[in-house]
Image 1 (cartoon, helix red, strand yellow):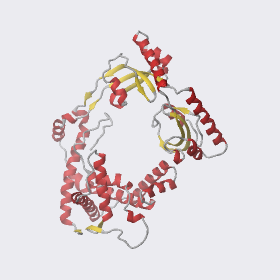
Image 2 (cartoon, one colour):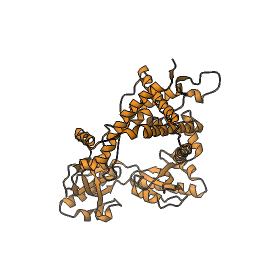
Image 3 (tube, one colour):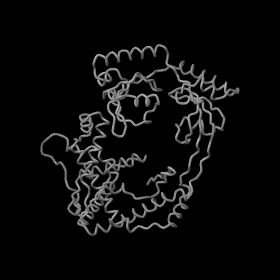
Image 4 (spheres, rainbow, N blue to C red):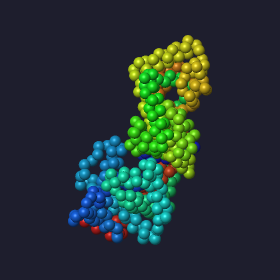
Length: 454
């Protein structure tokens, strides 16, 4: 269970908490995108479409439900980096138990006259579908993506409604029958902290960094080829052809076949600040001038603006290809800049003269203050052992050659018990709820009718 403190941005260890995924939540997060059984989607003719494997109270568990749960279990293991288990009788037994537990919780909720908010569920499902439509560019594109998994839009809608309904029932049952009986004492929270000291999170080192970037420039021939292609693209757009049509013909990006559709982005989502600035300066249906990034050249179209300010965009992309001699030429320049600093010139003055980083060059090369773990692996390796004032060896990245100087380092520290108290209390409470919920479900097995079919 992962908990975050707004005050300290703390993530606690996964040692406990309410194990809702065992009951329901994994199904909500993963099952909605799993293929339905092929029998649902293939031709006609007499055949077995589905069968009942168990009945809990008045709720049936179908073979397709069990098959889906087995697939979920495999995905859980795969995401955790574990070996994917075979479809063994033991796995199917465990998955059937999960489904029975879920149905028992629903039966208890209905017996207590609990009702879920169907309107809210419908709104949540529609919101999710709208997000997929934005991602894939149109309703027709979404339908095609679903059909590839043997699923219709109605199948997906029904599955999501069922999963969200089950999740609401679980929350209602926990809130009425479990949580009111849970008490967490201060000594229990402190005991947990002391027993898991080695697992407690720490505030990492913070570094204030300055940098100099020498981009690796492509050869004249490569630049001329890209410039000629940009002229062709602009001519095609000016002739009245749609952006999507031109993207399918000219773009060399992974989304070319989809008409260049990238999806919805928020400020800071894009990997390059030049791209970010270009996207958020566009009006709807406007196409940017060519934007050069570390990856290539982009022509970006603003397709729509969401209520929350995010933007749906498409692009035509042309990669920039560089040769080894281009890399070597840039290395000579970065080595020369580093030598000047080691010989006594101020880092900021050299950065202002040499650096190709548009974000930091005008500020004496200063990038800002970062947690070391938030930087890329390459940058972490270069900066981990560097002292304040030291200039690192050059680092080659897709953007070009970098050198760094650490201007300040704040040593991290272990979070105290007081800083973690609220999060620890929630975690201990979650463990107690999980245990009480398991005992509660065992009691339901004696209260409600359960009929497992052979």
